[in-house]
Every structure is written in C-alpha cells, then in structure tokens.
Amino acid sequence: MVKKGDTLIEVTLAVGIFSMIAIAVVAVLSNSTSNAQTALESTLAREQVDSQTEALRFIQSSYINDKDSKYAKLWEEITNNHSIAVDNSTYTDKIEEILKYTPETCDELYEKEGVNSIYFQKAFVINPSTLGTFDSDNIGDVLYGANEAVFKPASTYPRLIDKDNVNGGFTAEGIYVIAVKDHGTTNIAQGNNSSKTSAFYDFYIRTCWYGSNADKPSAVSTVIRLYNPTITTTTNTITK
Image 1: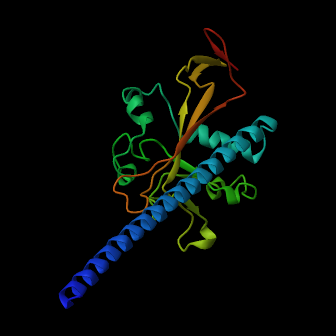
Image 2: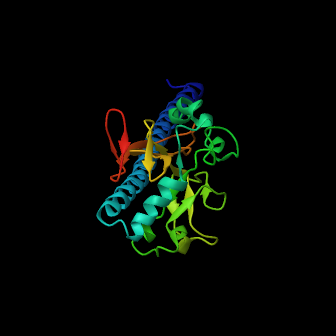
Image 3: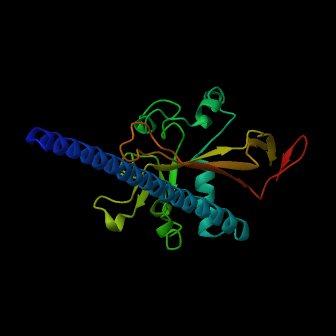
C-alpha cells in the first residue's frame, strides 16, 4: 500500500534529479558556447594579423620593384618614422622587456608611459582597404601612427573598423604593429657623411582582447622579417 508521504518523497526526489540533470546540461552547453566563441575570436584575430602581414609584404615588394612608386614612399615612411632603433640607449636597456610581450592587461598597452606602451614603441597600423587607392601625398590615409583617435582597446575582438563605417574615422581595436631595426646596425659612408641604417626590419604584429567571460587578456601575435634591398651586409660592414 502506497502512502501519501512516500509519493511526495518520490516526486521531490524526481524533481531534484531532473534539476541536477538540467543544470549539468546547461553548464555543458554554456561551456561549449564559450569555447566556440573563444575559437571564433582567435580565428578573427589571426585574420587581422595576416592582413597586416600581407600588407607589409606587399609594400616591401612594391618598393623593391619601383623605388619611385607611392609604395616606396610608404615603405620609407614606415622604416624612417615608425620604427625603433636598437642602438638607442633607452631602447637597448629594455629590448627584452619590449619584445617579450606578456601584457597583464590590454589597457596597459594604451597608457602614455612604459615600455609596453604603443606610444613608446612607435606603433602603427595599415588600412588594407585604402592600400590600393591612397595618394602618395596622403600617406595618412593608409598608414596610422599611434594616437588616441585611431588606436583603442578591443571592444569585442581585435579588428579594424573602416572610416566609412564609423563616425569619427578609422579605428584599430586591439591590434597594432611595431617595427624594430636590425640590431646589427653599422656606420656606412654616404658621401662625406656617415649615418646609421639597417639591413632588415622585424615587424611585430600584435593583438590583445578579452574573450568571453575572461579575466585575463588573450593575445595572438607574429613577427616577420623584411629586408631593405638597397643595403647589403658583410662580415664587417654594411654597404649600399
């Protein structure tokens, strides 16, 4: 004979078991969704990194083929005004710290001071959408140096937002590039003068953002080495 008390206990137990199963299912689905979101963000970040990589390779290749082209001026602007000279004493003392790239927060990259700052590192970014159409007299339409109007922490994932889609202009959220001159710089003769130059440049393309429900920043980065074809190196000298 079944008593009412026994039925109540069975119903309560059944509801409890069902609730536990439902919570477990929701937790698994939530974790799967979070992992999928993280994977998607990482893929999108890599695409942005690849875009900067291909743009730099194209600019250098175009410079090699035609020293009078608008891309030659763009290459010279990057290497002359947006690169770090390793023979600079301030930089040399902190080179390992700069190149290590292990930000504790994404915000620290956008602070005005410190070796991790995009301003200290002379960061820049290329706008791929205007790379084929910019005018040589308006390099600022395709090359952006570190400034608060363009460089911003990622609101979702690293991305470039074209000025046609945003009020206030082009922005680079959570992505930037730094160029480092060849550490084997040597004096070379130029007429009666002697100046310092470099045989190659290392371009560090970096991203930083916070994934879904993440407390620590995510980062995808790479480095490519591009040579200045007008300079050759030997054991003891660098000559043009």
